[in-house]
Length: 147
Image (cartoon, rainbow, N blue to C red; front, top):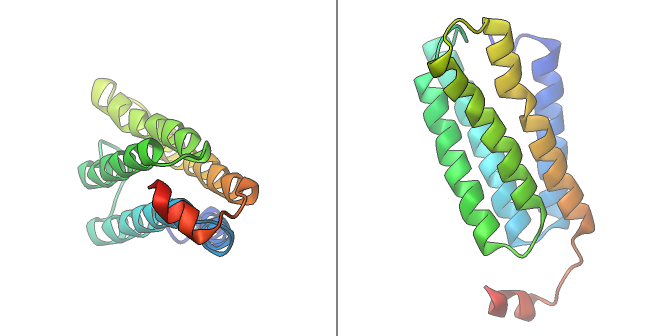
């Protein structure tokens, strides 16, 4: 199972730390970004457990979750005045590309597919955390008027 390895625990600790920091430190853009990443990660975990993801072929349900997260990140990048959503979106495009690669070249080994699909979540979370750190709190009324 996906949650039975030490790497899964490390990922979920990293997810909670980065998203928690973003929620604590950030504004609505960081909250929305944290929710995209939390919902995407937990949805992927749920689908993987329910359907027994093997990572040996295109995982259509997980691909759909990743596409939904990508669309949400694109929307956030367009609406936000922050730099980190652009970076997070770019990293997630790479993760979605891994699914596309499996369609084009199904002989890709399961280890390469699973590792490539998961790897890009770390830079996405790091972009969120760095963006939250760099965020200078704006007076609440000014932020609400801008967007």
